[in-house]
Image (tube, rainbow, N blue to C red; front, top):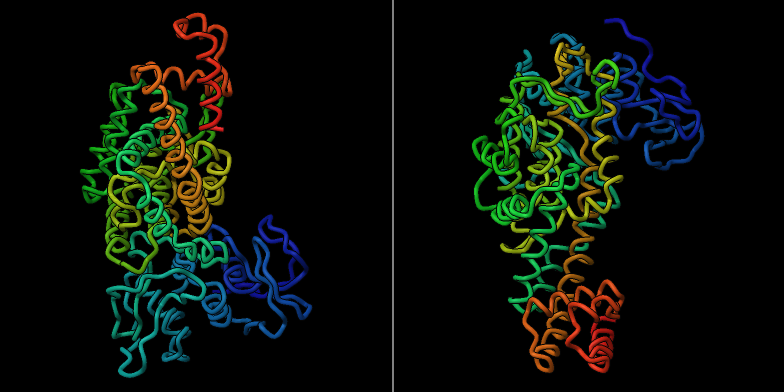
Length: 513
């Protein structure tokens, strides 16, 4: 197959401006040379004309001495050595190479670690065995370089043929990857799971139970609010009870359908179960009703394979005690919402899955609720950018046409877009939400309840107020920043004297402020 030269001097590549003029190498060079229809990697590699090595948000810049041999093998080796494994891009490349061509590349150095990785990945991704004899000697090596990307460590599958340990954090039908960043390493080093367990150990069980009950309802309401809905109290409580049961039942197709039935209270206008039609998120043109997608869901014909792979990956990550729970929760929860297997309810189930994985991985104790949806609601713009980080690069690669009922019909093969993606941005966002929950939200709620109990004891002892009246009084004091309004004094609390009101206001300020 004829291709252009790999390493080309650039300042802009696919609308991404490089930090300086340099040579595009590694995955970027391969993508350009073969015109691969794959999303651009989040990080591209550039060889500088200067002797300076550094990183930016979208580039890693190397010195001239790092310049690879300007061949397919040279750039593949460079990519695996410095950029990690990009499964989606590799799959598109392998589809363009014939078996004889890739066999020749590997056979030049069949025992080399990068040749063996390419060999394994080709056969794993393509489901096709090359005419290369099995290796009969040599050390086993890990497929994923843990200096670059996060990987599994427990119960690894080994390939005697390639003498490789498969430590990918997923399976063939679903395997997102996560880059090892300074930010994620910082989050993991905080050991937030132990922090929350220490905090909870110091809290009275009654206060903790009330905190969890409040956060449960708060999270349920927030999850609907993110979707632009305001459900009645009983519906929010029903979904809250479902969140409270997260982690108890293993995820399966039937369990996902059960969760959807809880989310969709009235299925009159929603086709329940897995989609049997295409789907998208976005708007319709006001005049003609033509779809204007922000995200195109996986093709409905691909859902069986994708969901089976997603469930298998979830089981693999759950059993791997070494794989960080927040990383696993992000892969599973965001992977689900990107596939978007239902006509409705995907977003709320996606956020439920965060609770589920954290509990199954024993990151948090049973009965403790992480109000992830409430945190996301506070940071909605950031959350949407994280979702768009997946959707936008794929929109230009999905070929579609509008249908008669103003839906979309996907025309090309898109399954690998949902199987393989870089989830680093999604993981960093979720970890920041978990940190905020542990360091701020839960302690603040516990602190409030402890202060509320002090205020309640005071009002019980001196005024013998019923619980309902105490709650109303405290709410009015909160709204008045420690002072009772004239209307409340004249109406709900007309039985209190002016002196008693002043005493109550002073006590409130002493406790709460």
